[in-house]
Image 1 (cartoon, rainbow, N blue to C red):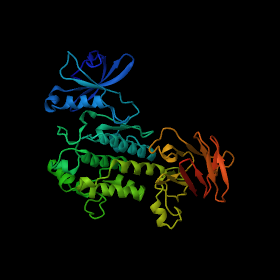
Image 2: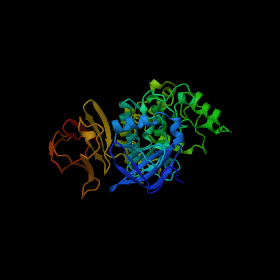
Image 3: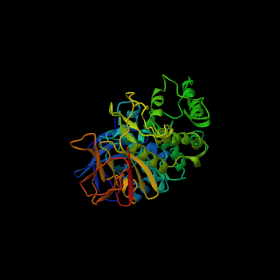
Image 4: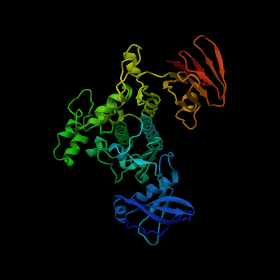
Length: 447
């Protein structure tokens, strides 16, 4: 039950003069309680701090005042919008947007209460990496990246990050050190204070949980622990951490029957992603300066999302892996099984796009889209409106075409050197060797 504010009570933002009517208690935690409130016809959320907590964190008000002043790093953050007070309650609180019901907690993913698509998971990973990149670019440190602070829409992968009252200037001392299992080893042992570098470790753990449904350090060593007390946790996560897939140390491999999620998911993903996680939890675990940057995760996760294609037999999402293709001498996935049904995978058309100095591959199965990120050199990581869409020929379903959804005509060149103009609304058939000039980027089709 709530103990700080009464339903029907009003609180005021002294700087704006706005009065908020407290309508509903939403929940509480270690720092305070959250309520739904209204101002006119608008709904907001108010977090009100326990007075006893404020005595432990003398800089809380300073941090929130700074957050209100500078504004959110991106739309992914449920950011403090104003400070509120009341003559009828001790302490203070702050106003933020209400989290929409479609956003679910990360804990629901790990406990399999929700089972999002790989597309939704890779989108969520991208949005998380992008959000923390924007935060860190402002010289700020989140300090407490964990399950409890991240929510995502299992249908779309859109992300919302809450509890932003712990955000501080990088390097500033504070009362929040992080959440167990997500803290970097140097925080677990007490050797360092939270920083953007420790945030990077926590982000890698969160992404591993998101994609592998498991903690990256919990394997055989965790299974041997009989009393999971503070010394045991310090050893496992701080003083002697070992990645479950460390290529140079097999002492902490996942145990079949106990760690089946990670054993099942790890081989599904392309080698490039597994290499990035390996770096994050080997060299990056012991050397904060060698951690995987947010920009690297962002690029890798979009590449991962672009590599998705459905199994032609069962429809399950699979990942295109260029390393596997090269290992098979170009014979594609003739003998590679779908992870879900075990039947041989058949690749759809794919396009190698050159955008400025960047080059990447996008799978063009029926229903796939290209965005400004793919076609416009000046719009990297822009996914607002699709610029192209893959659809079947109405009379020949085995034939796929790429429809121009942009406002400019494309120039396509066939393998026979025939030039075709593709105006907006028209399509070009996805045949091997076809090249499409999108403007300042070019794509070449392979089948």
